[in-house]
Amino acid sequence: MSSLQYLVNSTTSYNSVGEVFRSLDNPVIGHLNWLERAWASWYIYMNNDILATGLLFFLTHEVMYFGRCLPWLIIDRIAYFQQWKIQPTKLPSDREQWECFKSVIKSHFLVEALPIWLFHPLCASLNISVSVPFPSIKVMAAQIAMFFVLEDQWHYWSHRAFHWGIFYKYIHKQHHRYAAPFGLAAEYAHPVEVMALGFGTVGFPILYAWSAKNWPQYALPDLHLFTLTVWISLRLLQAVDSHSGYEFPWSLHHFLPFWAGADHHDEHHHFFIGNYASSFRWTDYLLQTESGPVAKAYREKMQRQRAERKLNMAAKTK
Image 1 (cartoon, rainbow, N blue to C red):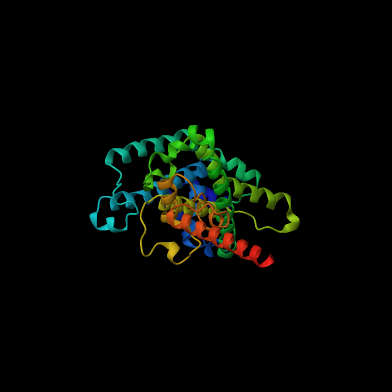
Image 2 (tube, rainbow, N blue to C red):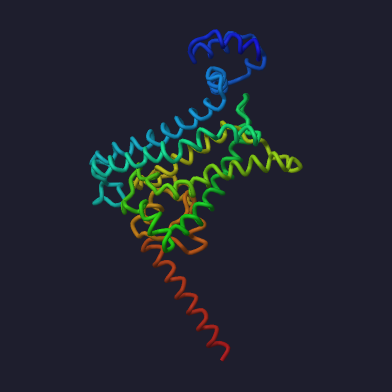
């Protein structure tokens, strides 16, 4: 890579780094796809892995979060889409959107920015790779699926804890300012909650990488920073969409019944209790913490049926 680095050092822009890649007659580089070349070009051009990772993660977070919020902001202003608004009488005002935006962007810079900028040294210590080529799609998909499941469990129990006593009064109540959520409100939360729930997104990949490094006997595939980038992007999309306040015929949970979606989380904000999980419905279902009148009616029906069965069994034993 020394000859490549020499050529890169003579360039003046990121695009010129990519041109260097294309000009080299190297069998390894020749097998890289365009995304792998773009990734490698970024790290070589920056010539500082700490800066490259920090800037990459910060920009990814801002672009994915606010980029996904923008369509919902537009949809809120188009009357046609109100037929799918879950709480149609509660549209966020321009002032509410603006106040929420200011709070969220302040949190991004004052709470989340420092851990992001210090992330690369941790990656290096845990063998989280930034090199190319990327892992196979199969490996990345398996790791991301595992992160979704683990984060969902962490979110359920920590979110449920935040609804208890002083935790709700002094921390989680901020997030419940909006009884009818909207996209920007996904990360509108107290700094303690941001860090606590954020552990579910970043902490489990870190634990996985630590396990892969320290328990080689289990032959866990190494974690790549690109996999982590994709995972965080998908988690951000899920968080914003679940706060969108819209239920469409094409919403994902109609095709994947176990997926939570906006209707699941909207009821949590509407009734201020239940539906604690983030991505999936199964934990709330199994632990009977589903929110809303339909879930309540179903639980009451099941309780009546159990009571009737006990009475029938008692009558037969007499």
